Image (cartoon, rainbow, N blue to C red; front, side, top):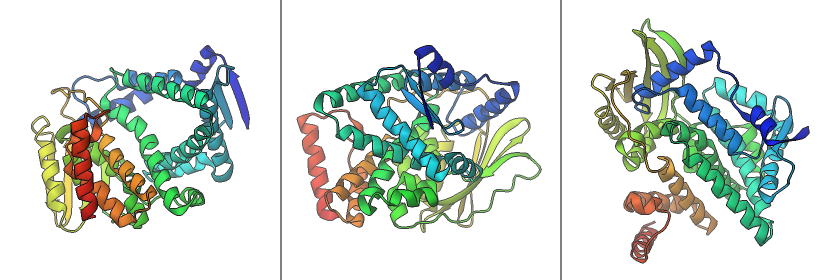
Length: 403
């Protein structure tokens, strides 16, 4: 395994997106149509430029990266600052993962099964676990320098004004959810469970999105792929809880979206083309008695789209959705924060209560009810007034008594 230190220009050339071919652009254009069909984009959006901006973030917002194909870590510059050392620990963890579990094969197999989010979350969550441990070993001055660099990286992400919110959210989701998921499972089951996660990935994205599902061993229900007749099929596979949540949260709000995502029990989806339009059809299984909840959320979501874009229906116990690219009509306002912040807050509360010795059932009850009962603005605020802190404390204490 090689570690290569490059100057800024050479690092940028290595980290940035490769040249986009005509075939790549056609595929990206189809993806833009699917994003519009799901209400995640609106109007004229050049996803090639957006992906290029995200590639720029992989350059300007990173200090090192590991390439499993080359078995090489590339580092920006020659100076081993605290931030570079922390990043290097993270990337060395990826190298160690690769030696034991063959990351290339793991990612390829996960991608073919529609489980890339799960694999990425486990891989990044484990590396962040080791990075956190290293940072905790630093002295006060080095720790402060490391934290200052993280603030700068967050500013880079916040500066992606030209990139659709959905892409920014999806880009960061495996890191946010993977970090918390690995913290929760190792906190309860010990560090050796990480090897188990690599050998046997969580059974669904739901188990990473909400770690309670992993501890309960909650498997996804098998669902048949929707029949789209003689349409030209592009891809078949799971749609997943994070995408369902993001689609709903973008249009109808995080709280309603989280309740609907919690109703999920399994799905199957197919992307296809009809009349030259990119389309998606999804069949959702739901937890007992929860089909009306998911149906209602999808109907509310459908009503925010251009007329004729989507159809929501029921087939027995399944909730069905079909949606096609409405074209460039309509607008989508940018959000003030990442829609994923609410489920992240819920898992953070779960992790904190478990760390204080609560049983899983009580911790899950506490986290879920606090998120449900407190106003969204208090749950996601960067800071709180004394009055707001009192409200949060009062609600948390009342919930704790009930759980």
